[in-house]
Image (tube, rainbow, N blue to C red; front, side):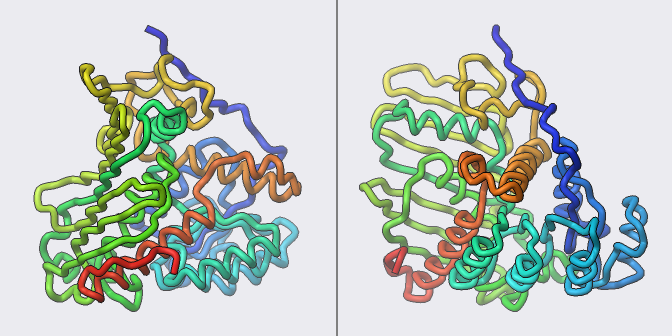
Amino acid sequence: MEIIIMFNEERRFEQPIRWGMVGGGRGSQIGYAHRSAAHRDGLFKLVAGAFDLDADRCREFGVNLGLDADRCYSNYKEFFAAESKRPDGIQAVSVATPNSTHYEICKAALDVGLHIVCEKPLTFTSEEAEELKAIAAEKNCVIGVMYGYSGFPMVHQAREMVERGDLGEIRVVNMQFAHGFHNEEYELNDPGLKWRVSPAASGPTYVLGDIGTHAYYLCEVMTGLEIDRLACMRQSFIASRQPLEDNAHVMMEFKGGAVGTLWASAVNAGSMHEQRIRIVGSKASIEWWDEHPNQLRYEVQGEAPRVLDRGMGYLYQDVEGVAANRIGGGHAEGFFESWANLYHRFALAFDAADRDDQETLNSIWFPGVDAGIEGVRLCEKCVESADQGAAWVAYND
């Protein structure tokens, strides 16, 4: 049995990237995930933040994280203005705030030359996302979008199997992210959920933008397929969430003839995540499930199904994403490892951009601004279709 450990923890910069956060304060699961991932390999150092709109809470929280009190700010405008004047000011910022603020915060960060890691959706509209892309190019800044599940090695094994033709011609892709945690009106007592089901803060969608884009991004990463047109129906089973959906079904036709479906739901009672993707080819199929992320099910027509495990020598070890194992095969890697893999790549991209090393920058895979744009466009087109009674709509019109 050959077990491979390939992760290179020796990659270091002369100094870690000076990094800050907007949002992600006390009690934020996502804030903790960002900090844990960024610190994992020593490529980032948290030196400042605007974690909370309440100045006292922000300062107390930041000091408890080990920051200087005078580098804990009550809002992002003050944060960016002050840090941009310091010789040791931040070089990059992570944005972990409600959706409605992403565009304005990211634009302000780019204006002072900061690299960005932003929660998704990147913006409310594709026009806003395209504007951020243009500003980032002008400023030589990099935007990363936190599609946190795309850092798992077996996701990249699946991608490589598709690229090498192991499945044959891709015919069908079934995607879903359908949990049951919001099957009742929990937002009455949960502020974190309340903003997610409010159009002013969440945008034009709830589950499509919140979790559906995760499942679709896995499809993008694994298959490279591009949507030609789609049809979407969405429901608000908890009536007070209208016009935002807590359940949605999307049918897709891809360029080249493949077809797909996406089920996004927060009312799949009894379910944990049920984020799965199944890719069906002319010769074989693969299936990945985020609750068992170290395995990839591989089914060749006429043969017994097999389960491929992370960290094993029979995988495509010449692919960096596949070989990003942080511990040997058989040990469970999970959510934080996937996020850390992404932050590792963000750091390498930020560093390459700062050195104007475009060749290296272009060679690094990471979920960037184009991934953010596609997530926003998916939401827009699903809303357009649903508002027309689940009519088919062209994706790029």
